[in-house]
Amino acid sequence: MFKIFIVEDDKQLVTLLDEHLHKFGFDTQPVNQFDTVLEQFERYSPHLVLLDVNLPKFDGYYWCRQIRKVSTCPIIFISAREGKMDQVMALENGGDDYITKPFDYDIAVAKINSQLRRAYGEFASSESGRLIEVEGLRLDIERLTLSYQSQKIEISHTEGKILEELMRRSERVVSRDRLLEKIWDDQVFVDDNTLNVYITRVRKKLLELKIEDALLTIRGQGYRFSPNWGLHS
Image (cartoon, rainbow, N blue to C red):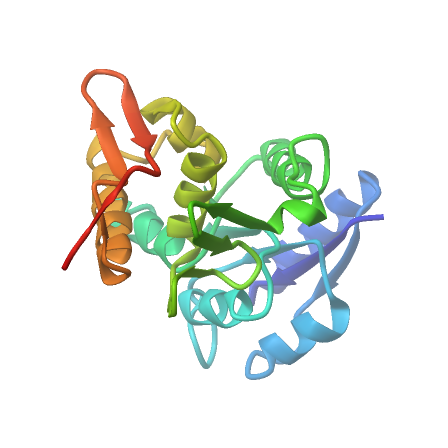
C-alpha cells in the first residue's frame, strides 16, 4: 500500500483528500505539527508527499528543500497560487508537479498515480541504476551529487533529472519534449524558455567540474550528451 504524506493546513481539504485517497487504497498521514514536518516525514517514510505552499512557520518551498536532503520521493505541490513563478519555484525547489486549487480529486489521483509509476513502477529506475557514470563523470541520483576526478558538487532535483535522462542516453539526441515529459510530466504551465534556463544551469554545473562541450544543442531536435568533452586547462 502506497503511503501519502499530506502537508496542508486547511483541515477541510485534508479531510476530503483523506476520504478520496482511502477510496483508492492509499494510506495517508496528515502533518500534525508544522514546525516538525521533516521529522514526521522521516518517521512515516511515505512514498509521495502532497505539499501546500502557504503554511504556518515555514512555507512549502522550505520543507521541500529539507525533504530533498534526505529523499527523492515524488513531491506534488497543491496551492491556490496560480502565478507562473510560484509554479517554477516549486519545481526549482525540488517539486515534481504542481496542482492549483481548487482541483478535481480524480485528476489529483491521476497525477499521484503517474508520479508513483515513475518512482516505483514500470517507469522507475532500478535500484542498481541510481548511480550513472559516463567517462568518469558520476551522477548520484539519490544524493543529488555530480563528481568528476577529485571534485564533487551538489545539484538540484531538476538538474539531476535532466542529467539522468541525458547521461542514460549518452551520444543519442534527447528531444526537448522528452526532457519536459521526464522532468515535469504536465507541461501546461511550463513555457518554452524554462527548459533553456535549466539547460544553462546544468552547463554551469559541468563547468564547475571543468567539463565543457559535453551538453550539445542539436538545432531543431534537442540535446545530446557527448563524452568527448574538452577540459579547461
